[in-house]
Length: 320
Length: 270
Picture 1 (cartoon, chains in turn green, yellow):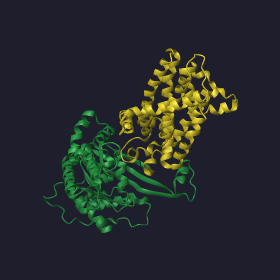
Picture 2 (tube, rainbow over the protein chains, first blue to last red):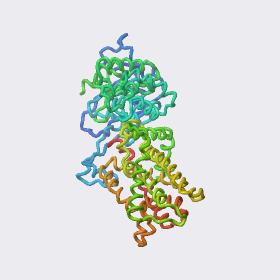
Picture 3 (cartoon, helix red, strand yellow):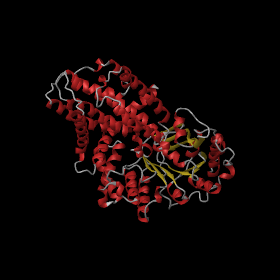
Picture 4 (tube, chains in turn cyan, purple):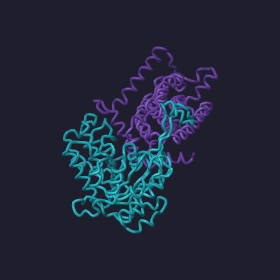
């Protein structure tokens, strides 16, 4: 929680730094929110009241809480690992597949082409190595789209997403496996897709198996797994690969209590490593507060707040 | 356009190790759960071959000895074995993204390379069948000669061409089920209106023959037969070469166009 946050926004647009000079937490975040609002000028829903900075950022209740919240990451280096540069993601919506097929050939028949939706609208931010950042926002605010672009499976329509480092995503734990292959083969398959060598996969395999704790099922085809088993394997794989950037999207809501605790414990261990950057999406303010040091609030694809986590959570809870 | 092409080539080159390993996995998956395992890659074509041989040579008395005196079965195999590759590419290769949805929108993986995975896997099976074809060839007492040099060239050409077809059509199939159905419906006419089970040069009606020249299946089948049976060079059938060259260029342009339009949109809709 330093001047980092302000510096980060400078890259965005309007430097509102004058007010941040004072160094007070409230002033700082006001500056942040201010420039965030400026960034979002071209929003789709311009009619919506966008963050009035001054009142939007109430001073945090306890600015310096001493001991118990040690899981938060502190060691932040200057190296930027994730950079969004004016990123807009537009989904083209058609009434049906026929319309979409015609759309490929440049024909947008009225009635078949329903319109464009900007899931992310002109997002600009930088995340440095070792940070733990929470994305807050209501359903449909564009959090998952942003995370998907970071994992590289979805491409921005405009702008550029730069990612340095090995991303491991806990987006949908049960996804990304081939149901016809066994658990063990899937570990090898995923490892190979990531470009690991055979030795690395041999080292990874016992770690994943141990974490997933599937017993004999590890050599059974995955279509015979229960959803909990798939999730365990998925989580085991995602955390077993020593990620440099860990993306967690509501993943902790799966599994029984014991497994959840195991997951949380493992995420904490990973976060202890100063070189790991964590991006977190959750609706649970307490989880977010526990893990993250910085929060970015999205609303209809537009960034409305970027600052220290307490303020971000407070902002989110007051406004939504 | 060049940038799109270089993007496709770069992706496929950078991910070549993964592509190689995933194509092995594709074969493992296909033979999974069967006692005979990899044997099925041979049994099915053998059945097919036998049926055509029986129907055409025994039943319809269509078989005719060539100048070199090679038996009809070699003529048949030299055409049908490449067809197995093309059949797989038409039926599954053109809708391969639905086969690997997790590579499209769950894991970072270049989309054009998914087609290459499937093409590689199919080519591996094809190479095994080629070994069988060569065995039949030598069993029929045919000599090792320069015309056989066409075989590796044709295999490479077949790989490139059908990989392009797969890239273009699987992206379209991902967007629209109509495309997948259309291509699969075309599979049967493409087979019967090609030279797989009859000699296109025996038709005798020039304009029909000219149309058939534009069927890529005709080109490959006839070319393989030129190498194994008729003992001529590909370019001794100029009409066929021109027809294929046109189809190749059109397919290439079409692939680049579709890829450029759809590559970034496919993960959103699949």
